[in-house]
Length: 185
Length: 416
Image 1 (spheres, chains in turn orange, purple):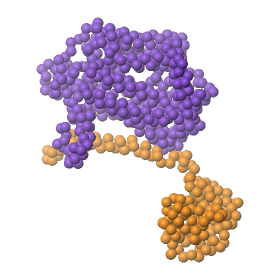
Image 2 (tube, helix red, strand yellow; image 1 turned 90 degrees about the vertical axis):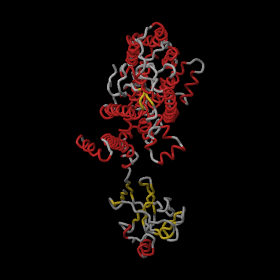
Image 3 (tube, rainbow over the protein chains, first blue to last red; image 1 turned 180 degrees about the vertical axis):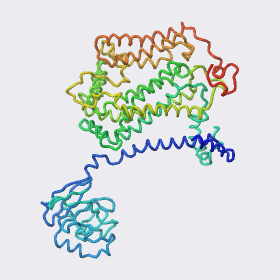
Image 4 (tube, rainbow over the protein chains, first blue to last red; image 1 turned 135 degrees about the vertical axis):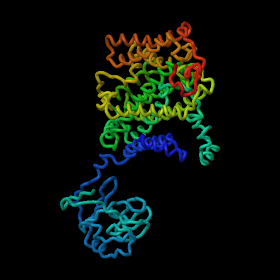
C-alpha cells in the first residue's frame, strides 16, 4: 500500500498526479464498496422471504376429477388449470400440426400423462386469466381457453392459436406423487 | 465559489439555471467558512443527520414487511426477524439506531450547553433544536408501540394516559388519541401513520436548523465570534474529512451493537405479545426517556408530574434568556464549569432513578435530582451570570490557536 503510494508519487512528477489524488481515489473507492455492501442486504430484503418460498409448492388430490372436468387451484398466488382430458380432446390436440402455430410445440412436449393437462392459467399476453374452466364459459375458436381481455384463443393443449399472446400457456413444474396426488412446484 | 473553475460545462450549465451546486458549496463545501478551532464535539450534528438518514432508510424497508394490525403486528415483526432476507439486520439497525440517535443528540445538546451555543444570536437555532428533540421523542415513542409487545402496549397506555391529568378536557383528549376506549387497533394504525410521517417533518425542521446555523456560522470552543478570515477555514475539505472520520468511528460503535449486542438497549418483556388483560410487574420506558420519567414520578401530584415533565424540556427552550452570562464558552467560566458537570451528573442520576421501581430511596433520590434540575436552570443560571467573574477572553480565534505571534498555519497545531 505504502509502496504503491510512493510509486504514485514518483509517477506524479511526470503526469501532475499527486499522492493526494491517489489517496482520494482509493478512499473514495473503499467508500463506494462500503456503500454497496450496505445497500445489498436492503435490496435483497425485497426478494421473496423464506415463508413466501415455503408456499411455493401445492399438492392436489386429482382422484375426484372426472374425465372432461377441469379444476383451478392456486399456486404462488396464480391459478393453475388441471384438466382431465377426454380421448377426443387428446386426439385433436395431437393431430394438429405445430408448424402453423405462433409458438410451435407438440402436445407430447406439454404433458406427462396425456389425460392430464396442467397449465398456469395466466394469459401470456398481459396476464389476464383466460375463460374456459367453467361449464358455459367461452372456450374460443379452438375449444380450449379464450382470454376475454384482448381475445387470445388457446387450444386443448393450452397452445396459442389466434390472438395477440406471443407464447403458449406455461406448463408449471409438477410430478405425480401417486396416481391420484399431483404436486405442483 | 472556488471550485467553479474546476467544474465541467454541464455543472456550470445547470448551476446557472438552478444553483444547487452553489447551494451545496455554501452549505458543506469550500464556500462555507468555518471557525478553525472546532473540536470533535462539533461532529455530533453531522452524526445526527447521518443517523436520521439511516433511520428513514431502514424504516422504509421495515414498513414494506410490517402489518399495522393488533392481530398481525407482533407476528409480522417476528417474520421480519426470521423469514425476510436480511430482515434481522434491518430491524436491529433501526432498533439500535434509535438509541444511537438519542446518544448522539444528547451529546450534541450538552455540547451546546458547555460552549454556550444557545446564546445570542443563535437563540432560534437552539429553539429549533428543542423542537427537533420533541419531534424525535414523539417519533421514538410511537415507533416503540409498533411491535405490539407488552412494553409497547403498556408504554402506550401509560404515556397516553398522561394527558388525562389535564382538568376537564383530559379524558376527551385521551379518547381522541386512542380512537376508542383503550389502546387498541385504531391507536396502532394512527401511530404507524404518524411514525412514518414524523421523520419527514424532522427533515424539514433540520433544514430550518441548518439555515439558522448558517446565518451566523458555527459557534466554537472559545465561544468568541470569528472575525477575520484568519479565524476561519473552508468547511470542505477540512471539516468534511473530520466529519467523515467521526462517521467511521460512529459506524464501528453502531455496528458493534447491531451485530454483537442487538438487544442491549431493549426490554425482554417486549418479546411477549401485548396482553391488554395483564400489566408487566415493572414497566420502564426506553432508556432515553428515563430522566424525564423520573421527573414525572417525583411529583406526588398527577397533573403536577405531567407539567414538570413537559417543563423539563420547555425550560430548555427559554434557556437563552435564563442564562444571563454574556460569556459563551465554559472554558472562561470557572464557577459555571462545576455547575455544568453537576447537571450532567444530575441527568445520569435522574436516568438511574427513572429505571428503578417507584419506592423507597429511589423516590427520594429522584426528587432531589428533579429539584436540582430545575434549580440549575431557574436559579443558578440567572444568578451566576451576574455573580461570576469570567476569565479573560482571547482577542481572536487565530490568536488563541496560533499563539500571539500568529505563526504561519501548520507551524503550531496545538492550542497553547
